[in-house]
Length: 339
Ligand SMILES: Cc1cc2nc3c(=O)[nH]c(=O)nc-3n(C[C@H](O)[C@H](O)[C@H](O)COP(=O)(O)OP(=O)(O)OC[C@H]3O[C@@H](n4cnc5c(N)ncnc54)[C@H](O)[C@@H]3O)c2cc1C
Image 1 (cartoon, rainbow, N blue to C red):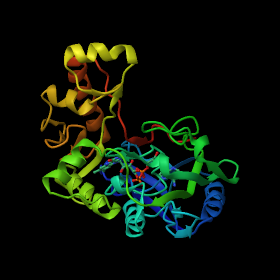
Image 2 (spheres, rainbow, N blue to C red; image 1 turned 30 degrees about the vertical axis):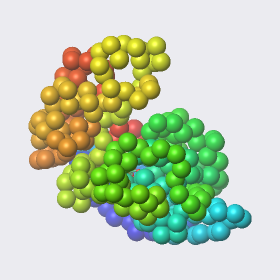
Image 3 (tube, rainbow, N blue to C red; image 1 turned 30 degrees about the horizontal axis):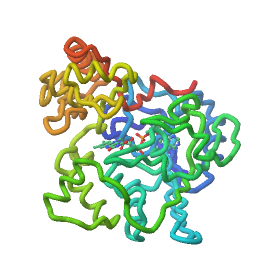
Image 4 (tube, helix red, strand yellow; image 1 turned 90 degrees about the vertical axis):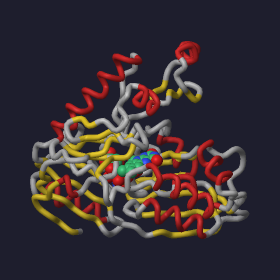
């Protein structure tokens, strides 16, 4: 376990916003979380926060008087199951996209449309990452965790994770309780069946690509993403900053009357932001991407306080125009940490 002191959180997160963390513990081995618990207690700390690649997290400006625990354990074990299925057991610290590469290299389908999503395997179940018609929850069979309060180790079955759109027990009722050590996925060799996500299909048509091989689709998804999403290595952001909004089924008629695009009960929030005239606009050093309206780019800001002001102003403008309240996707250290 590597222990660091007085680490700027802004250097650990892709939005580059946050005060200083008193400690960072980096765990490289599977069960080092047990050691981390003992260190946490021995140092008399009260607050902790689990972090992966920081692609969906930033922190308030206040110093964080506790420990940020980062999972870097990244082993992948592969087991061929009878038939076409393959079981992957993957350390939570593995880079998500490296795992996707591994699966597509082996000709497995299930996560190819999630190619290019920044961050770690351990964080993927937390907000049930999704893109281009796939959700990670569909491929997870179970998750190995440590209960940080009791030190108990256990497997949680996928059914008990209560996955839904950008939700699971890990960012819901059990937020901050379980440290995700490794994730077990079951994928099948073969190709995606059924209709592809609209913009993915259009891209393939445009390029005359007819193959549905997982590696081909993964590359197509990465190309589409590169053309509109900021590269976290070069441009500070947390990806989609606002969630899509869900309405009640009885509200769909009203959406249609008002010409607001939706997919079932899911309202296209990016459209609301765009039609509020906000694409490309700057708010306190944060810019709404002119390529993808859900994305907020940190152009020049240094403070969380500026982000709060920006979000408040953007939300107000959208609410005044459409009557919908925007909901933030990323997590904020310092606002939700366990005490
Ligand atoms: C450019 C860009 C594009 C993006 N595109 C998408 C997209 O298409 N779809 C999508 O769903 N998301 C997208 N995201 C968001 C982000 O990539 C995902 O949420 C990803 O899963 C974050 O991984 P991370 O390791 O960086 O998580 P972090 O930001 O480090 O953590 C996220 C949450 O998971 C918790 N967590 C992390 N590791 C553990 C662990 N080991 N145990 C328990 N809890 C843990 C944290 O406490 C936090 O609550 C995008 C982000 C960026 C910057």
